[in-house]
Length: 221
Image (tube, rainbow, N blue to C red; front, side, top):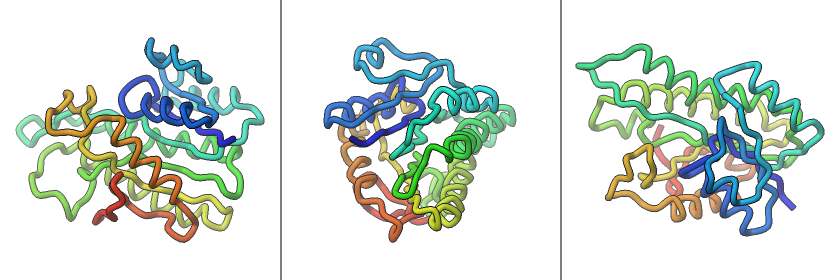
């Protein structure tokens, strides 16, 4: 049985990861600040009250897990706030860096003692963090924080390869979640997570550090 730890598990893609993984018989540890009713109804292990922007809170998560061995750590927690050039809100940009980039790195670093040879780390980034793919500008905080997250993932891939730990940097697609205001042009969380899990299952030390679309396409940096 494979043990997954998923941050930002209370709704959207995080919740769908928990649902699909539980359905296929894996052990799920759902990490969030507060559990939604639908997450509670899944019956997975809940680790609530965790703020990934807080060193003390993440240390508490590490302490709670004690001797748990993590096979796959999915850093899913993230926020999206619209920041345009005409409304350049630096506090919002800092907050998105703290959650989207530093939060994932903070959790990964704290939980490294729980990972083993053969474990996997997943960073949920975005195509909006691709410099080559940026054809529309704007979204300063989100784009910049996701570039930083992807760079952290690439460094982690190099640093952890000798330990036998592989890293995936994944874009979920345009998904109908609260974060995207349930955009009518997006795919469902169910469809997105199905593709994401396929990428995670395919992750090895040979392709560690790859920036993938959920569909399997390798994305430009």
